[in-house]
Length: 96
Image (cartoon, rainbow, N blue to C red):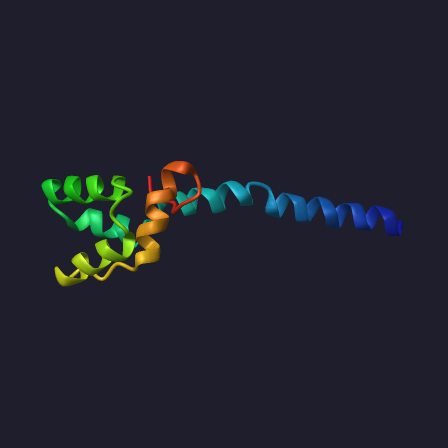
């Protein structure tokens, strides 16, 4: 077997092993929730709606919201709150 043919076979095997890898990575990423998403799953519907409304209000800073949440026993980093807010722009966390 020539060196070129051997290299082509190895390349083909590598491609087959990695085929669909990006799709798998992205699918796994879509199912993970950030700290805010995790908190949302634990809240009652009315509290979830209230938190979502506050997250939509850009006049409330993430650090202010973090302080209030922490006072209520929810340790959510300010950066997680910022990233969760940006998800609708496509630049945030992977929460749905």
